[in-house]
Image (cartoon, rainbow over all chains, first blue to last red; front, side, top):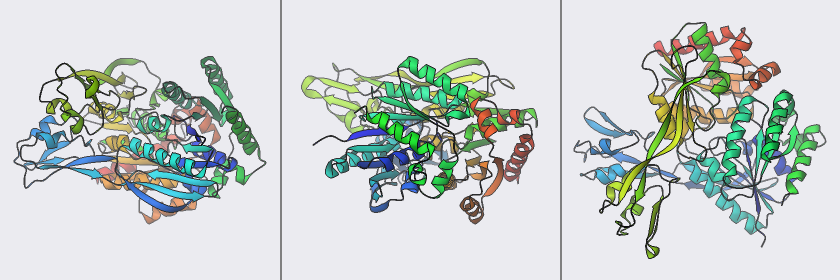
Length: 292
Length: 286
């Protein structure tokens, strides 16, 4: 059986148009499993309005809890903790759960066995079907951590689903930034499409992103969205990318159609199938598809 | 007083708001203000705060080194490690801590019965110090490309917050650990959103997070003008303070693209930001 081809859409900077473009791609390809790995702020489902048929809780982290009845007040936990997660208030020791990394060292050093390590199971993974195919996406629990592990799990399920259904592609809406969830999204994928915008911040963030993806040797394409907002900046970006040997798959003009499509819960290509944005997105999809 | 500027969704204008507040607070209201860029993955305040670095210091964590000569392959370090960072293959006498997985908690070196583990510093990011309006009033936390440990970089950045005056924290996007590391250290949270379905969806997540953390907060709508009713209904129903609205103008997007502070580009916005500041300070002092 042929391995599904996994495309991850990233951006470095947030708000450049990753999700709108991923949604448009989803409406072009007919044989994909779609995932949203921007688990902090997953928005793709707002356009694809999938029907969820299964929801799974996912434990991705842990945190310590001190039993104050057992605590003898020796303070060893506070002394050993490297994350400043133990507080001393009113003669008792407490864990600051927002600072705790769940390493468990405090439980090891506690002579009274007063520290429990509790798994956090507040993350969720949704299995669903949308009008373009199966969709798997996740949501981090409120004030939860470790979104990287959640991303890996979503991608694992997507791969299983793709193999089961014979899907040719896995199309992933990735998280912003370059940190843990982004690295989890890129590891082992087949192609990265980076959506940028012609702003100094967009360019700065794209450079950090390309440095990160460069470590994985994953093929990379760049889309310059809202390119006519600052054409000098667009030219600068194109010139530098060319020097680095990075391909620009296309340039999409600034257009409020994107917002109107979003309001109707449609992809850009559904909203205006023959509009200039849709035409350019179709062309980009063909360009990146010449690769595999 | 520490004010965090956040948003669930990326690209709503956190950095725009942070740099405008920095500008208006300092230049027009003559406050002592410090700006800390806590978006360590993609710190962008420096694009707008054009100033020379005065100094740089590394952010380090302690990474274990295991001496295979001393190791008896008892597996205690591997078992205690919550981050699956210890790779152990006794058959070929191999044991190593994976530097990218390790969080530097020290549990393995504590548990090792043979003292086979020593620790060395590993640099995961850096802090850059700048003088813009005054001494050391802008600090940027920046994680090294490839590192996954945003939280220690953010914690180190916030350790340099002044005790007195106003400290602005430009937060990373989202709602998970790097955001918590920033918002949990703030006294007030400004949630920046935009009037779109995406903006509202992510604002809800942010508002729930801020509520869970028990922080005073208000909403600032950026790119306003587009009458997206569900956002205003949400703000009304949840009785969240609406601090103000920055109108959408293509010329603002263009000024942003060139790295201009919006209030310096259009001084008409000064009153708007002065009003926001007044509301925030009043809510905190009442």
